[in-house]
Image (cartoon, rainbow, N blue to C red; front, side, top):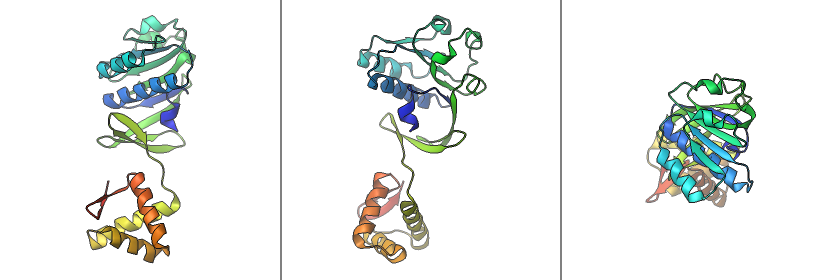
Length: 222
């Protein structure tokens, strides 16, 4: 999915969230390292967003082929991949010139999208749902990404049966109030016509997907 493609495919992300930008850059660097390729990477940061996060990653990776700069002019003839961050500041003139190595740009994170499609990047827009929870939307697809332990996790979409079960749990909580695990299992069995084992399996799946959690025998929603 999207997080696993960062640094591998040519992607542009539109967001105003500087912390999210740092985490996306980290993921792109990690993905590039994980490929085992010797392709050089230059991280160009035009805005002062959590630079220590990126510096720490570069130091821990001990990768000589990864460099960091805040000078866009220094990569005009760079022979490798470019990851660029520019939030809250116009992208400087060299990146508008035809001489900029556009096919070398694999990740552009900005609060404006006017250059992304022109450069042939697949554009994704970010909508903040709540602190640490984001909806990422492209022209044809949308997905949810959450921040956890200074990393990003892409949530799996619910299958039809899990979606039905989740909505049933939410509706039941609105109607009856607090639900125990036993209550919830009985509700799923009665309304979905499933066995107790299947109902327990559904609850486990919903917990794994961070839709519900169990606290002292009671069901809670994330």
